[in-house]
Image (cartoon, rainbow over all chains, first blue to last red; front, side, top):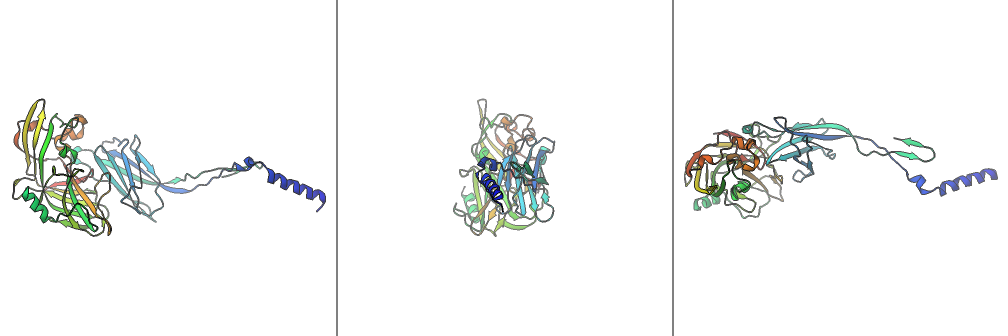
Length: 154
Length: 239
């Protein structure tokens, strides 16, 4: 290797080593995965939604303890992504002194749903909970690019 | 009261501390029983009710481990049954700080007791002989005050799903006891003024105006479903 080449190589190495940290810190990473989300829709037989009903979720590995909880939206809808635990997931939806329960058995096969408790028939309305398991894009999304090459991979 | 105590002894009521491998049954009329109907929670027709006693005659109480879970969509429950002998009369006013009255504790196999069946039946003897539910107390409205005794002789079977409430109930393990509750929603009987006249509960409720003369009145539940498991529902059928 000639002296000129060696000098050029050393200069290149020096440039890499001494590049400002900021030039190497704009690392954006994208990952994507298909996962399973549960969407529930709580409504009365009249079609009136259970707006802002309380939602309590129980996981198969600890069914006595609340795994997650929240408030349904104005349309009585609520979504959550269960942990990768096979078994029976249970959901309680409660409002105004009444409640309804639904179960979702998740395993190797397609999920099996057991829909909610029967209504108070005298009231001629029902508390219904429909559970839908659907594939959803994961939320771990980033983007990566390298300064200089302007190369983005996704 | 002595008769109620003796029936309680026959049910093997234990000390308040629950024992592992056991299931304890409670009954509750909630705060509408123990505190009564007070403003703003008056009856749908504006009465304040103060109860001195609410006597209920339970029978055929069975806790179930059902799989798949029973959804209170019919009269029959299938699964592993834990039978509590009866009948037993309970005063829903004689409650603890959580508005609950303890009925009985039984040794129980581990698992999740996620269904409960029970009957209200007329008592065969005793002070409420011939009646399944007796409510006694004082009613007040616009300066008027009347003593009342309301009695029902209805025989009603309840097939209830899982207890729904702030805590999920019915779990028995080798290390911990479980409990279940039969809950009476008295607002289904009398309605609630703070819920508005068009509320479904108020439309169907009896209210108190029909009893305003005071004294003794007999009534029927009709299509009213007073029995629940917490906020959970029961399939109700006449016996």
